[in-house]
Image 1 (cartoon, helix red, strand yellow):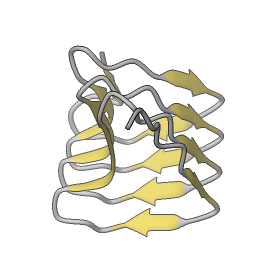
Image 2 (cartoon, rainbow, N blue to C red):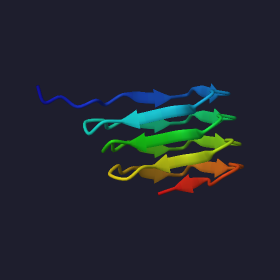
Image 3 (cartoon, rainbow, N blue to C red):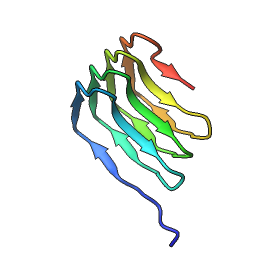
Image 4 (cartoon, rainbow, N blue to C red):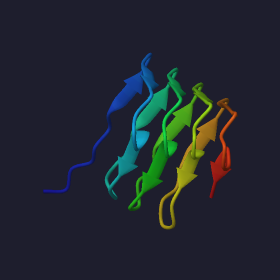
Length: 94
């Protein structure tokens, strides 16, 4: 089967998780992540890995104890109109 994953994740509060807020993973992942408040997560707000290609827009990614958004090698993402502030490491890692 040659199916893609197109979840829409919107209007959520994702907060205080031990590892991370959201993970987009896999070569067929085309997630739409929008209008979320993602805050106070321990390692990362959003991690994109394993050739995933999410569209991340209009989110507030706040006060992460690691990185706000981490795009790993081999993955891509379209980031638009996000507020990424207050991360202890980096707000954005490419």
